[in-house]
Length: 366
Image 1 (cartoon, rainbow, N blue to C red):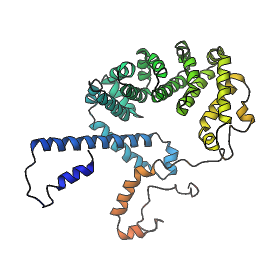
Image 2 (cartoon, one colour; image 1 turned 135 degrees about the horizontal axis):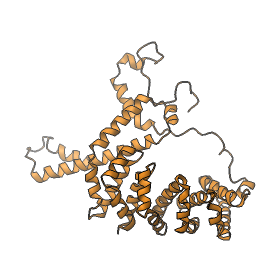
Image 3 (cartoon, rainbow, N blue to C red; image 1 turned 90 degrees about the vertical axis):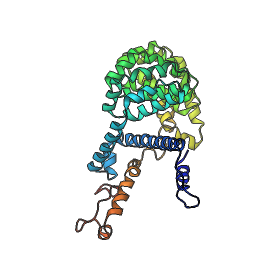
Image 4 (tube, rainbow, N blue to C red; image 1 turned 30 degrees about the vertical axis):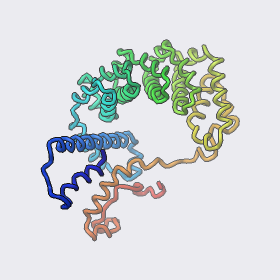
């Protein structure tokens, strides 16, 4: 179902080509369900956009001309969307018999709680954590498990009660099972959350070590998926940097780790220029892990493959805010009088300050 089809259907009743007739009850239900489904999808999409913007550093937003008033308006919109969502009903759908509905409900939870402590607390209080853990660890549908893990990851980040609940629910063992799966997507999400947990609480390094995470991560360093390789290297680096445990745990398998890292170095050396450029993070992780474990620069440093020509140059941050505020800017332009549109905005008349573009006095930001 698309908006185009809905429009064509509705116009068929007012085009004058045939006598109008009453809409049947079945057609009325179909229209209501179709519009409701699309409106829900639009809200979820908008919430994702706002969450992405909220995760952008304030300095980046200011450099792109976003004002405190703009951010306040965005937060007000977020509040309206969040308050309109019935958390209890969403959580109920996490237990639905249909796997696709369980997965979509987890998607909604992810959007609602991402970078939002208030929503995280609401979901925890509404007992949303339990069905998410259940779906993550034991759902028969892989997509539902992956979506549940994504929701859990958003729910417990920067949420100490959530992390504690995840630990008590044997969530670490669930992460281990995800790393043992054959799904690269599942592995990436599990590694991402593992990396976060290791970086936030180094005292848990021993727990991860006892559960066999170092060996699993070493295996995934050779994955065909670049995202899995990078995430596995990042997890090993966090373990290695733990002064109480890391080097001892990893060096117990020193020969294997050294062979793996050397194998990655050899693969990097053989990469085509475009692939080498794309593997920037992997190159840095391999070198950092080598330095941390063996206290000497890797071959990548000595051969000039760690930092390629031009990589050390300053790069402007991407315009992550422009497309979000473009509709607002266009609306202001449409409402402006002809005199306001023609004014240069130099302060001598009624000119408008555009919401996009470089901040004042930062003419080189583009």
